[in-house]
Length: 73
Image 1 (cartoon, rainbow, N blue to C red):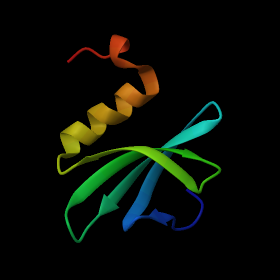
Image 2: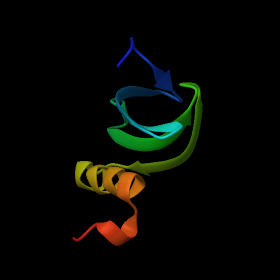
Image 3: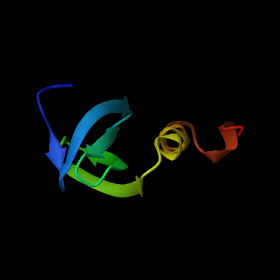
Image 4: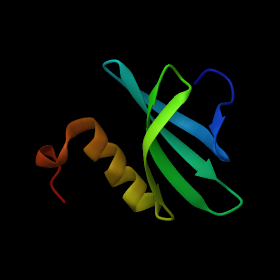
């Protein structure tokens, strides 16, 4: 990660580049909430998946990277 990035009150804690975009993981410690976003140009965040569950956050990240057809639960 390059420095401290944040968006909408969430601290970006990890990013995974995939093609022309990256998928980022964010944490809002005040509300104990998590998010994954698709991000372009390190400033354009969209398609947020919000949750209070770390398990769902991990699943959401995998689905975004590989698609529903490749994930066995």
